[in-house]
Image (cartoon, rainbow over all chains, first blue to last red; front, side, top):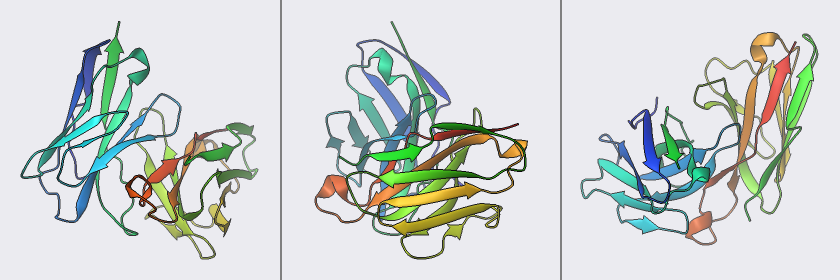
Length: 111
Length: 121
């Protein structure tokens, strides 16, 4: 079973920041928070991951609360092509631990 | 980098036939490959995990004799759906885990293929 909870769907205006929340209250000390997204009829795409510090890359920023029980993925300037299902997944780093997908959040970016 | 390909991208077959799907890591070596299945409007479900040169580990409820997995090299894994039936129609997605952690961005991340749409008539 997925160890995260996410809203079923969200809307965002094109050009605005999209903030996608994720709750992972039972996360263990050795588990990372991963974010993937899946555009319709495509394979999932890796976005970002982190342990406890905030992370940023060319795609997004990841903000993890100090107690690590929740996180937020931020797409700073959403475009129509960011419309997708976004999955928040917790998984141990290292060779163990498969990616177990929950239901994710369907983000719709509107013009 | 970190590109995973699948072939074919879609396939239609008759009930009772077998279908082979290939998954390749194009620019990296994958110690582990994963096979997922996704039904319409549902999330991805892990079917099996395969390590190069060893037998695949199947998730509970997945028939190993029906879904044959071969991981013969560090860049190729195949999934064969044997005696396919209409209920096997689904979107099959493979994923590969990078061999070495040569920098944070490559450390054990899984990269996914584009998926194969199987329709069994």
